[in-house]
Image (cartoon, rainbow, N blue to C red; front, side):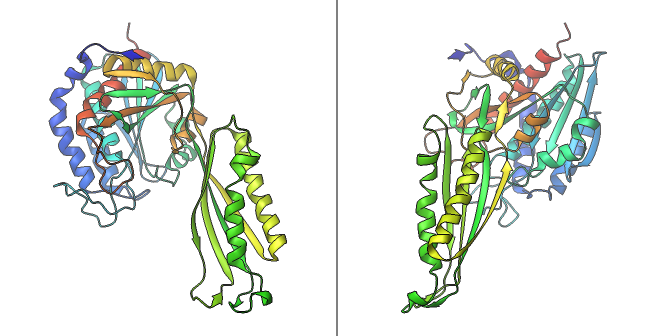
Length: 394
């Protein structure tokens, strides 16, 4: 374990920013917007960056915003990224600044991420203890809609070059003020499968007259759940879960079709290939045995988030300077993150910043979740430490 011994001076430096930034975070929380609809949020971000004197470009990858801060004569460039979108969840926090948009909620803390990166822009614009260029990337549509991929397709790194890129995520599993990162995989690849089982339908009292889609779907669920245990090496890490099964409308009717949905999480492309192949083989086998027709739609929507080892070391070193504790994470998370697309395109790293107040805190994506304002200063200080170390003016 690596541990800092006292509150770092870098955190104290930003204390004067925290009151206005907390108010800004609460405003973002009260006005959440879904992916590619972050119009108010993007306008607020752009306005803040323009007021700081940054070069600002809007509409990148849909509703993304990019700000450029230059100082000195070096051609070194570092990018920092925050996500802006909310989730399609109804909030249940009772907060005075709770969501005013029905069914939309900042249940993953992206309001806090946006606030911390804006705070870093404010602090770096006034201190300018670096030599080079900082690229502030405010990304839309992280929650399952691949806003990072959209920004890259819109020329993010061609229009705004960077040598490396960094991001963080608040982490309720860690105490507030602690941090973790790791070289290599830190978040899982996320795949989705949608399977349709088709029989002919018929009377439940005459099952011999029609292929039974419900029975075939049940067999399929059971066999899918053997894939990881029997087709993937025990030394590999992967998860397959069937999360929805739907079909039928009456107690005495065999439905003509049943639909299944599920997710697969993994960290290695070869394992990912084997799982997809196995899902298709299992479906084909059940279809043959049950005389049903089974269609599989398999979508690899997010790759694994893979930290560059050197960049992970830089991220950890910055965390040591500003956090109560900073260490290498023992294992990656099976959650997914579309920052993976940016790390495929550019060297960089992703960090977890602890935010837990206590054992009763709600987890990410829970209706009672709220971002912990007490870590805003830590996030700003981490971004600042990264910039000042990677673009050292010395």
